[in-house]
Image 1 (tube, one colour):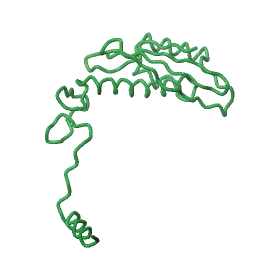
Image 2 (cartoon, rainbow, N blue to C red):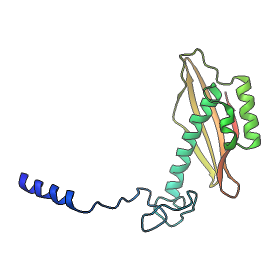
Image 3 (spheres, rainbow, N blue to C red):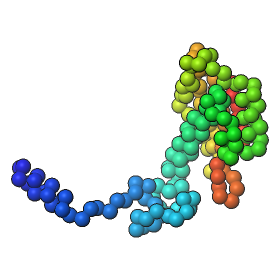
Length: 163
């Protein structure tokens, strides 16, 4: 048995290396990356044109944005870093929440802990989400809406609420 394993290992090491195939599939059947990162791939498996993956992408997007949003609301991140990811109205709401101290920390040791992000898509180009944030002994809820805007279809936060 060890002889078979040894010959298999030797054959594997001396053979040409395998071409890597990306897990996401990509647009090009040859396995090359598209030149434009935002290139729309409607026919590839795992692309945005597939309802299951679009749902997964919306959930992942909402979770990433919730984390960044809570960092801004607790003062760990400057609000200007989210300016390009928010609409004018959304940024105004965010700035007023930051000024009001909507998510104040109880002390310097209190780190925000995010619960699961609950999201829903009322339309294909919008995601509404909420998350529970634990800060020490206090609990807060943060809700926001993301919409695809502009010719590039960039996701922007259009509304924010925190209690």
